[in-house]
Length: 152
Picture 1 (cartoon, rainbow, N blue to C red):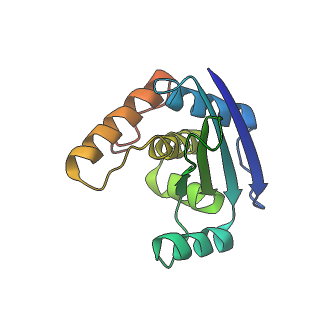
Picture 2 (picture 1 turned 90 degrees about the vertical axis):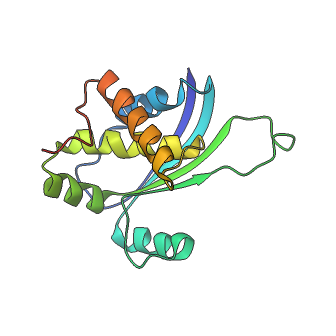
């Protein structure tokens, strides 16, 4: 698996995992579907997360992860550009505490969830949600993380 990851840290948060974790999580999520990929993960604070969520999803709050799949036609660039993820660090930390989850496990889950969105998976309909959750569970447990949907 060859992955090129651009990790952009635009957050004041202190408990952001090292890039090696982000690469591992991305590789695990993406490798069953393609051999190479390029993506950007931008870690933001709530102001930027709120602005992006309002602009692109018309939701008036900062959310945990936003996915922006690449929409470049294959004939324009011959690179495996997957897209961009924007993750709001304060939301990740708050959710982990509220849900009683280890912070690293929650980061792993959100990166995995976002990567699956970049690959074209969705959870708008029940069947899609069941499939996506099953994949997330498998990918995370393969790395030693607990089932993110199990009640704590």
